[in-house]
Length: 333
Image 1 (spheres, helix red, strand yellow):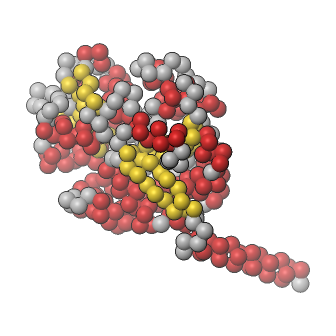
Image 2 (cartoon, helix red, strand yellow):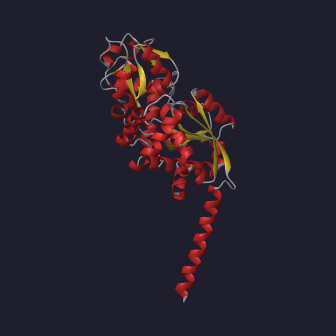
Image 3 (cartoon, rainbow, N blue to C red):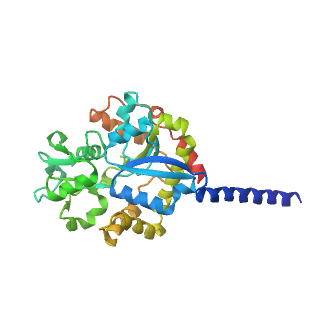
């Protein structure tokens, strides 16, 4: 009899929980969150996939996602409180800001591997070493695309003091400049490698950053300390939605949904284009399914800043990161 009462209580509790989840999924008590993310193509596709699958709504969150190409504007919005967080963007630039007193924290990982490679339309450029004395497209000093390019070139023995870095903007802008030849080389999505001829560019060997720079954390989630203190539950639920997205997109059965999101966002793209990016995601599985970042990863990012003279010293892990929100988010799954 006691066992029967216990089972009935469990059933009632389960029904109540299911009802609460259902109410959130239908829009009741959803809380708005303002997110600013990097504006690259793969981010736009992931954002559309999130929208179509309603993963954030599953956790009672109503997202307002902005695509921002300028990292300084993103940081200004987060520090000023107009933006609650970034969930998928480069974060190398926030460490120097923290060093100067900016109250920011990295709260989770996103894409653990870079999704970029280096392309050229110049027939005389055959290797990365050939880029010495030439113009290479990047973003601003210390920003994601610049950091990645410098890290790659240095690892491959290129004297970066002999390379002329040109601030073009986002990786998409850099790739367009490489296509038309206004720069000698620039980054583009790894998924383009198999279709380089279609875009009238060539992939430069040993420049697939997903392979060559596995220690570089391409994107993460970050927020102000004020947001962490005052909107902790909202940020935790937001991270839970992204963890659900990352786990979903790594599964083979997500292919149709991914292709649909790709073709929705990139109007002139073909199914072949979509499948090339899908192949990249399935091959490398770049996303942080368990959200957390290690001290080693954040130390590497900071040391790169120090080497580039945009940061004076490597800050302690506890000063730059708070992974407790990521741990709480996983419990919601």
